[in-house]
Length: 363
Image: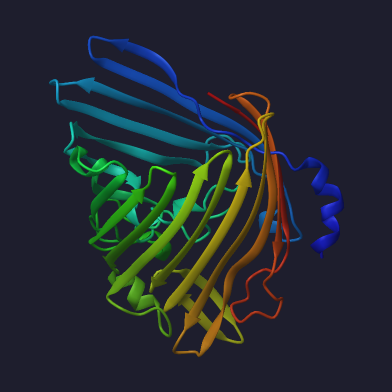
């Protein structure tokens, strides 16, 4: 097994990526479009074959807006991810595709493929060079990017309270019997809704809380014989952060019910969805003026399967990483994740450490 001795190889390479910077390609007569993207050449090292090897990819997207009246703006966004480690003609994923209206002080309302509102707290700690936010699964109960969501966001509480933001979200059904047919259990959902509330103080301390409840599909419950049964999946979370003076520290706690897809068999007993998952994450970063941002984090997710009397971690590791940005467009990074899950864990989760090293160009 790889384990701790890899530190001697990785620490000299602990360097990582910066933020995306959009390029304005059109701005005339109240119409504007920005193009953005990045290319990351990345390699992972692990004794777990599914986590080892080339993981290069590219993102490309655009954001557009048009001034309808002095108080109303129409906008849209599209973004896709292209895998660089696959054969030609395969593995292109749509991350965002939505359009909506922005009304002064009232807020924004849009529909399409967007980030689920149960991700709002997870976003506080999903800032690691490579990983983080491990339970923010896309297409699964509003904890990540989600299809068919109607989202309302209000910033500064109708312009009356600086830093007080809230949101409401509704998601339509995505299952085997809908137009965009889905057979995979971890990408299905029924109708659901969610809400979020955040306050960021003048001294850059932020606090957030969110809740979501989504119907599970017939297929999800029919396939789950012993675990994770229930008409609804639920997710709630809270987070606290400080982001100022080159310092970023944050911690979140969240619980998921009937939502974490495990799909593992151990000792002849199968677990599909966990009945409950408790998530705790904490991160600390410091941005030096010359471009280096070291990062230290702890990430955990502990699942419970009541019917089989199982209780164990599905995610548990310490992350040591860093970011070095040569400028706003070019950076290099690395992250070493020290896996704290035991090899005899009740869910059969892989216990190997992981290392990622990459180079990113972005615009």
